[in-house]
Every structure is written in structure tokens, then in C-alpha cells.
Image (cartoon, rainbow, N blue to C red; front, top):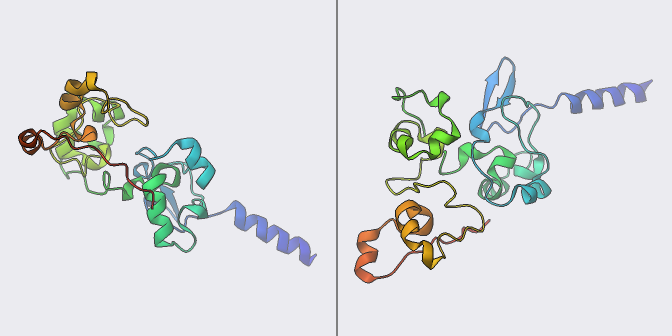
Length: 201
């Protein structure tokens, strides 16, 4: 009888897992849920590799189970957290902690930030408004005035920055990714700045 009680309490505890790492979450009644801002970015390595490293991805709005302990440990280990943010922020539900999303939207934006779509974030027509009013929603917190104007500039294995034939396109539409932001100083020296791949530590 004691064995049945122990097994049933163990099953109940695992079935009703609660979120203990509160990063990128919000309260709902007595529970916590992952905010949309937890998963509104891209992983910095492939999704397949993130799944191998960290297991199932965090799901916004529908999941009140704790994230995989591989993401940041339990209790949270700052080194593991830093690594997860720099490799697989979407997988672990840490997008809101990345530099691109770690700021606040305007309190009174010209367009409601909650209604902004990913396509709007990539649109040249919306770019200046959303960069100013909804930077957290679109991941523009660290963009400053130098931005990519075309979607796909920073795709993994992108050849846009390396292709001599696409240099004019890169200078105009992929300034940030390809390192053409400071054109005044680079024009004087005739040198081009290249984006350096960030390390995962």
C-alpha cells in the first residue's frame, strides 16, 4: 500500500510540473505560462541541433511545464543560461533575454504591438515605425539605425555577403549582416567590415 502511495505521488508531481525558471513567463491564476516573447526569435544554430542539445522546445501560451533542465539547470546556473541564450534561445524559451528582444515597446505605439506580424517586422514600409514603437516585438532592440532591409540576409550558410556579384545588393539591403553599416569610415580606407560569427560560450 505504501508503494502505491509513493508511486502515485511521484506520478502526480511529474504530471503537474510547474515552471520554476520564471524568465520569459507571465502569471495566469496560480500558474505560469511562457510568453510569446519567449519564442519569438530564431535559434542561432539549427533547430535540429537545438533539439538534440536541449530536448523538446518550449511552447508559448499553451505550456505550463518547466523547461528542460539542460537549458539552465535547476536551480538556474548562469553559465548554462548564457550558453542557451547564445545558441538555442527559441528552443529553451529565452528569446526575451537576447539583446535583440531585451527592451520595451513604446507605451503608446502608433500601431498596437500585439497585432504586429512577423511579415510586418520584415517589411521595409513598416520598419522605421516598428523599430521605434515595437522593438521588443520585432527584435529591433539592438539594431540602432543600421538595419537589413531585405529578409533572409542573415540566413545560415547565406552567400549574400561573400558574393562579389551581390556586393551592391548587400551594401544596400543587407548592411547590418554584411558589415556595411559604417560606410563613411570604410569608404575612406577602402576596407569592408565583415560580420564575425559569435562563439557559443
